[in-house]
Length: 261
Image (cartoon, rainbow, N blue to C red; front, side, top):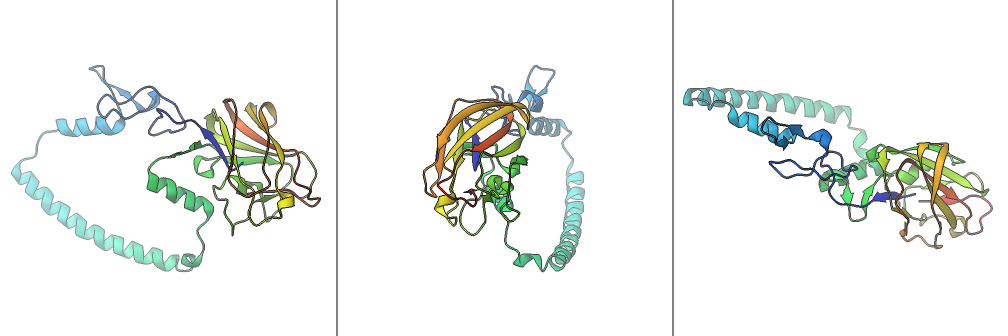
Protein backbone atom coordinates (compact mmCIF):
# COMPACT_ATOMS: atom_id res chain seq x y z
CA UNK A 1 0.00 0.00 0.00
CA UNK A 2 2.72 2.35 -1.08
CA UNK A 3 0.48 5.28 -2.02
CA UNK A 4 -3.23 6.07 -1.94
CA UNK A 5 -4.04 9.01 -4.16
CA UNK A 6 -6.78 11.55 -4.75
CA UNK A 7 -7.23 13.44 -7.99
CA UNK A 8 -5.79 16.93 -8.22
CA UNK A 9 -7.79 20.07 -9.01
CA UNK A 10 -8.59 23.15 -6.98
CA UNK A 11 -7.48 22.39 -3.44
CA UNK A 12 -6.98 24.49 -0.34
CA UNK A 13 -3.46 25.91 -0.14
CA UNK A 14 -3.34 25.22 3.61
CA UNK A 15 -5.24 21.90 3.48
CA UNK A 16 -4.29 20.17 0.20
CA UNK A 17 -6.49 17.17 0.99
CA UNK A 18 -9.62 19.40 0.82
CA UNK A 19 -11.20 20.15 -2.58
CA UNK A 20 -12.47 23.74 -2.89
CA UNK A 21 -14.11 26.09 -5.33
CA UNK A 22 -13.36 29.27 -3.37
CA UNK A 23 -10.33 31.52 -3.42
CA UNK A 24 -8.96 34.70 -1.88
CA UNK A 25 -10.46 37.78 -3.59
CA UNK A 26 -7.09 39.54 -3.48
CA UNK A 27 -4.40 37.00 -4.41
CA UNK A 28 -6.77 34.49 -6.12
CA UNK A 29 -5.12 31.55 -4.31
CA UNK A 30 -7.47 28.60 -3.66
CA UNK A 31 -8.55 28.23 -0.03
CA UNK A 32 -11.32 26.36 1.78
CA UNK A 33 -14.05 28.25 3.65
CA UNK A 34 -12.25 27.73 6.94
CA UNK A 35 -9.20 29.65 5.70
CA UNK A 36 -11.03 32.69 4.25
CA UNK A 37 -11.90 35.69 6.42
CA UNK A 38 -15.00 37.73 5.51
CA UNK A 39 -14.51 41.52 5.26
CA UNK A 40 -17.05 44.33 5.77
CA UNK A 41 -16.89 45.17 2.07
CA UNK A 42 -17.98 41.65 1.12
CA UNK A 43 -14.58 40.34 0.11
CA UNK A 44 -13.11 37.11 1.53
CA UNK A 45 -9.39 37.26 2.16
CA UNK A 46 -6.75 34.78 3.24
CA UNK A 47 -4.81 35.52 6.42
CA UNK A 48 -1.73 36.67 4.49
CA UNK A 49 -3.61 39.20 2.35
CA UNK A 50 -5.55 40.47 5.36
CA UNK A 51 -2.34 41.08 7.24
CA UNK A 52 -0.81 42.86 4.25
CA UNK A 53 -3.81 45.17 3.88
CA UNK A 54 -3.81 45.97 7.58
CA UNK A 55 -0.14 46.83 7.44
CA UNK A 56 -0.70 49.00 4.36
CA UNK A 57 -3.35 51.01 6.19
CA UNK A 58 -1.04 51.82 9.05
CA UNK A 59 0.35 55.35 9.21
CA UNK A 60 3.52 55.93 7.22
CA UNK A 61 6.52 56.50 9.51
CA UNK A 62 8.38 59.83 9.51
CA UNK A 63 12.01 60.11 8.45
CA UNK A 64 13.01 60.32 12.09
CA UNK A 65 11.18 57.13 12.99
CA UNK A 66 12.65 55.46 9.92
CA UNK A 67 16.17 56.39 11.03
CA UNK A 68 15.47 55.22 14.57
CA UNK A 69 14.04 51.98 13.22
CA UNK A 70 17.14 51.43 11.08
CA UNK A 71 19.40 51.90 14.11
CA UNK A 72 17.31 49.54 16.21
CA UNK A 73 17.10 46.98 13.40
CA UNK A 74 20.86 47.05 12.91
CA UNK A 75 21.41 46.59 16.61
CA UNK A 76 18.92 43.75 16.77
CA UNK A 77 20.47 42.14 13.72
CA UNK A 78 23.90 42.14 15.32
CA UNK A 79 22.48 40.74 18.54
CA UNK A 80 20.56 38.12 16.60
CA UNK A 81 23.65 37.06 14.68
CA UNK A 82 25.60 36.69 17.91
CA UNK A 83 22.82 34.69 19.58
CA UNK A 84 22.35 32.57 16.44
CA UNK A 85 26.05 31.75 16.30
CA UNK A 86 25.97 30.64 19.94
CA UNK A 87 22.86 28.50 19.36
CA UNK A 88 24.22 26.89 16.20
CA UNK A 89 27.48 26.08 17.95
CA UNK A 90 25.55 24.50 20.82
CA UNK A 91 23.31 22.50 18.49
CA UNK A 92 26.25 21.25 16.45
CA UNK A 93 28.01 20.17 19.63
CA UNK A 94 24.90 18.49 21.08
CA UNK A 95 24.15 16.60 17.87
CA UNK A 96 27.71 15.95 16.75
CA UNK A 97 27.08 12.19 16.78
CA UNK A 98 23.81 12.47 14.83
CA UNK A 99 25.45 13.62 11.63
CA UNK A 100 26.65 10.08 11.05
CA UNK A 101 23.07 8.78 11.31
CA UNK A 102 21.39 7.98 7.96
CA UNK A 103 18.36 10.07 7.07
CA UNK A 104 15.08 8.19 7.59
CA UNK A 105 12.58 7.67 4.73
CA UNK A 106 10.06 9.93 6.51
CA UNK A 107 12.65 12.70 6.89
CA UNK A 108 13.48 12.33 3.21
CA UNK A 109 9.78 12.62 2.29
CA UNK A 110 9.35 15.73 4.45
CA UNK A 111 12.38 17.31 2.80
CA UNK A 112 11.03 16.49 -0.67
CA UNK A 113 7.63 18.03 0.07
CA UNK A 114 9.31 21.12 1.56
CA UNK A 115 11.38 21.57 -1.60
CA UNK A 116 8.27 21.14 -3.79
CA UNK A 117 6.24 23.52 -1.66
CA UNK A 118 3.17 21.30 -2.03
CA UNK A 119 1.83 17.82 -1.25
CA UNK A 120 0.50 17.49 -4.82
CA UNK A 121 2.52 15.13 -7.03
CA UNK A 122 2.13 13.89 -10.59
CA UNK A 123 0.05 11.01 -9.24
CA UNK A 124 -2.10 13.16 -6.94
CA UNK A 125 -1.95 13.51 -3.14
CA UNK A 126 -0.69 10.51 -1.20
CA UNK A 127 -3.12 10.00 1.69
CA UNK A 128 -1.06 6.99 2.82
CA UNK A 129 1.88 9.09 3.99
CA UNK A 130 3.20 9.48 7.51
CA UNK A 131 3.94 13.08 6.55
CA UNK A 132 0.15 13.60 6.31
CA UNK A 133 -0.36 11.81 9.68
CA UNK A 134 -1.31 8.43 8.23
CA UNK A 135 -0.86 5.58 10.74
CA UNK A 136 -0.99 1.79 10.60
CA UNK A 137 -3.64 0.88 13.18
CA UNK A 138 -3.98 -2.84 12.56
CA UNK A 139 -2.02 -5.64 10.91
CA UNK A 140 -2.70 -9.38 10.88
CA UNK A 141 1.03 -9.98 11.34
CA UNK A 142 4.32 -8.16 10.91
CA UNK A 143 7.91 -9.20 11.39
CA UNK A 144 9.54 -7.00 14.08
CA UNK A 145 12.33 -6.06 11.67
CA UNK A 146 9.85 -5.48 8.82
CA UNK A 147 6.82 -3.71 10.34
CA UNK A 148 3.73 -2.71 8.38
CA UNK A 149 4.61 0.94 8.97
CA UNK A 150 7.25 0.52 6.24
CA UNK A 151 4.40 0.50 3.71
CA UNK A 152 3.58 4.18 4.34
CA UNK A 153 7.04 5.75 4.77
CA UNK A 154 7.15 6.69 1.04
CA UNK A 155 10.35 4.75 0.35
CA UNK A 156 10.46 1.56 -1.67
CA UNK A 157 13.99 1.19 -3.03
CA UNK A 158 16.70 -1.20 -1.89
CA UNK A 159 18.61 -0.78 1.35
CA UNK A 160 15.53 -0.13 3.50
CA UNK A 161 13.35 -3.09 4.54
CA UNK A 162 9.67 -3.26 3.64
CA UNK A 163 6.84 -5.23 5.27
CA UNK A 164 6.93 -8.95 5.95
CA UNK A 165 4.23 -11.10 7.45
CA UNK A 166 5.26 -13.67 10.06
CA UNK A 167 3.77 -16.52 8.06
CA UNK A 168 2.31 -17.32 4.64
CA UNK A 169 -1.26 -17.65 5.91
CA UNK A 170 -4.04 -15.64 4.29
CA UNK A 171 -5.68 -13.26 4.31
CA UNK A 172 -3.17 -10.77 5.68
CA UNK A 173 -4.90 -7.48 6.51
CA UNK A 174 -3.25 -4.12 7.06
CA UNK A 175 -5.39 -1.12 8.03
CA UNK A 176 -4.19 2.47 7.76
CA UNK A 177 -5.93 5.49 9.30
CA UNK A 178 -5.60 8.75 7.40
CA UNK A 179 -5.04 12.12 9.02
CA UNK A 180 -8.28 13.34 7.42
CA UNK A 181 -11.01 11.78 5.30
CA UNK A 182 -10.33 11.41 1.60
CA UNK A 183 -11.73 10.03 -1.65
CA UNK A 184 -8.99 8.00 -3.35
CA UNK A 185 -9.23 6.49 -6.80
CA UNK A 186 -5.84 4.82 -7.18
CA UNK A 187 -3.44 2.61 -5.22
CA UNK A 188 0.26 2.20 -5.99
CA UNK A 189 2.08 -0.94 -4.81
CA UNK A 190 5.68 -2.07 -5.18
CA UNK A 191 7.29 -5.42 -4.42
CA UNK A 192 10.60 -5.09 -2.60
CA UNK A 193 13.54 -5.58 -5.02
CA UNK A 194 15.63 -7.38 -2.38
CA UNK A 195 12.97 -9.92 -1.36
CA UNK A 196 12.50 -13.44 -2.72
CA UNK A 197 10.03 -13.10 -5.66
CA UNK A 198 8.07 -16.07 -4.32
CA UNK A 199 7.10 -13.87 -1.32
CA UNK A 200 5.68 -11.11 -3.54
CA UNK A 201 2.01 -10.19 -3.15
CA UNK A 202 -0.15 -11.75 -5.86
CA UNK A 203 -3.90 -11.29 -5.31
CA UNK A 204 -5.18 -8.54 -3.05
CA UNK A 205 -8.18 -6.36 -2.27
CA UNK A 206 -8.53 -2.70 -1.35
CA UNK A 207 -11.34 -1.79 1.06
CA UNK A 208 -12.30 1.61 2.49
CA UNK A 209 -14.29 2.47 5.62
CA UNK A 210 -15.82 5.66 6.92
CA UNK A 211 -16.84 4.07 10.24
CA UNK A 212 -13.74 2.73 11.93
CA UNK A 213 -10.69 0.46 11.64
CA UNK A 214 -12.71 -2.69 12.37
CA UNK A 215 -16.03 -2.13 10.59
CA UNK A 216 -17.83 -0.51 7.67
CA UNK A 217 -15.32 -1.53 4.98
CA UNK A 218 -16.51 -1.43 1.37
CA UNK A 219 -14.70 -3.21 -1.43
CA UNK A 220 -12.98 -0.77 -3.78
CA UNK A 221 -11.46 -3.46 -5.98
CA UNK A 222 -9.74 -6.84 -6.30
CA UNK A 223 -6.45 -6.92 -8.19
CA UNK A 224 -3.43 -9.06 -9.09
CA UNK A 225 0.14 -7.81 -8.88
CA UNK A 226 2.79 -8.84 -11.38
CA UNK A 227 5.73 -10.83 -10.01
CA UNK A 228 8.28 -8.04 -10.37
CA UNK A 229 9.60 -5.05 -8.42
CA UNK A 230 8.32 -2.34 -10.76
CA UNK A 231 5.87 0.33 -9.59
CA UNK A 232 2.33 -0.98 -10.19
CA UNK A 233 -0.79 1.21 -10.34
CA UNK A 234 -4.36 0.05 -9.77
CA UNK A 235 -7.37 2.32 -10.28
CA UNK A 236 -10.89 1.99 -8.86
CA UNK A 237 -14.09 3.98 -8.47
CA UNK A 238 -13.56 6.75 -5.87
CA UNK A 239 -14.73 5.91 -2.35
CA UNK A 240 -14.78 8.33 0.58
CA UNK A 241 -13.47 7.19 3.92
CA UNK A 242 -11.01 7.60 6.78
CA UNK A 243 -9.56 4.06 6.93
CA UNK A 244 -8.17 1.85 4.18
CA UNK A 245 -7.46 -1.87 4.27
CA UNK A 246 -5.03 -3.84 2.16
CA UNK A 247 -6.19 -7.46 2.24
CA UNK A 248 -3.54 -9.79 0.79
CA UNK A 249 -5.14 -12.98 -0.52
CA UNK A 250 -2.09 -14.84 -1.88
CA UNK A 251 1.60 -14.64 -2.75
CA UNK A 252 3.70 -16.28 -5.47
CA UNK A 253 4.34 -19.57 -3.68
CA UNK A 254 6.35 -18.84 -0.56
CA UNK A 255 5.39 -20.93 2.46
CA UNK A 256 7.42 -18.73 4.84
CA UNK A 257 6.04 -15.21 4.58
CA UNK A 258 4.66 -12.49 2.27
CA UNK A 259 6.47 -9.22 1.54
CA UNK A 260 5.76 -5.77 0.13
CA UNK A 261 7.85 -2.61 -0.14
